[in-house]
Image (cartoon, rainbow, N blue to C red):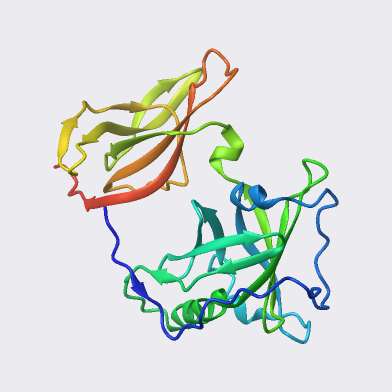
Length: 272
């Protein structure tokens, strides 16, 4: 599935200022007590905005909507900074020079958005991203802590984001890419010591030209797919990252399945 991209406007030209300043004031939430992270730690985690401060150092809630909306999420993937949980997925090239973080003008998918507040937040993010000035990652000292990313912008605005491991960090190694079609309803199945409701799936394969070349048989899926929430009555075609697990119990799956993208959906009429 290909996305169309367009330049987000209005935007500010890429800023590449040296990280010579210090972060501003503001009452930060308690952070991790471990060592500072290097540039690789940026790509090792999903970063969710936890707290924001305005140029004067005061807490700034304008970067957050109501409690039903997920906070801004930032990922660093293949030299691109990707922003999620807005109307559209936003993407911008980036580079790291020591503690200086240079972010280019972002591009965005073109999904219509009926939520005016969310659209205004998206435009605000698009304006500030190219003014990124410096970054710092503080790693956890124990399993009870989570890493923290601090980003400061040229006007003194500061974000603090909390990290959770990416699947590659969590499971190690590179995943196998595969496609699964998930049927509209779960069905009873036997898994281990009890009865469960299993997803119904079949494997789909595509050629390099995007044409479907193979459709497998429907079967019970005894695992779950991280990041996928099944809605009864709707079938979905999913792009999946499958990770090989090590040292798993004999009755457990040898793989972890992580949703990469929903590439197609259809509402199924109930059978009579």
